[in-house]
Length: 171
Image (cartoon, rainbow, N blue to C red; front, side, top):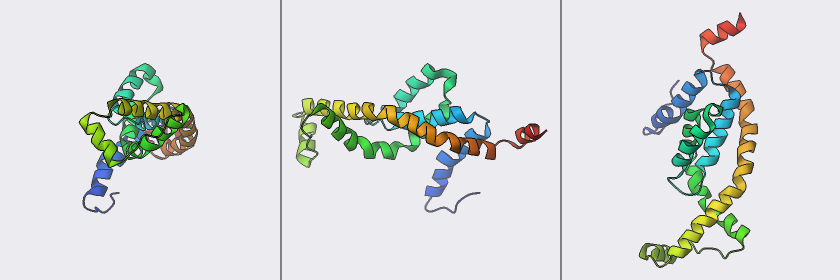
């Protein structure tokens, strides 16, 4: 069932997120594996350095092998991109607090210094602080998301199980 189009946004949402998600559910993957993969994709997807998350997922998938579901990891990595962008500053501030550093000034003057190369050390330190903030919260996010998503995936997998698989399980 398609949602009426609002300037193509709903169509894009269906084609890029909802349809792939339904396809994943219909393939009969285990709820535990889906929940872990979704939690992993989300946790890696909010890594505070834009553009690095796909590489992190690309490293995690072969390392974890059959314990994760690659399409789910990558889909959630894609879905949480707006959240990733909104969490860069909180991760930065958390990392600065952990290190006891002064706050990096996020002003237009600071941006000008970055572009002219006058703040290269500060920028590197800022990136390290943001990564530290993420490293601090990631071990809490992954299991929490898993615990929240597992019951959801149990219901969704049962609901979207292919018809022939439902008939076999009832027999």
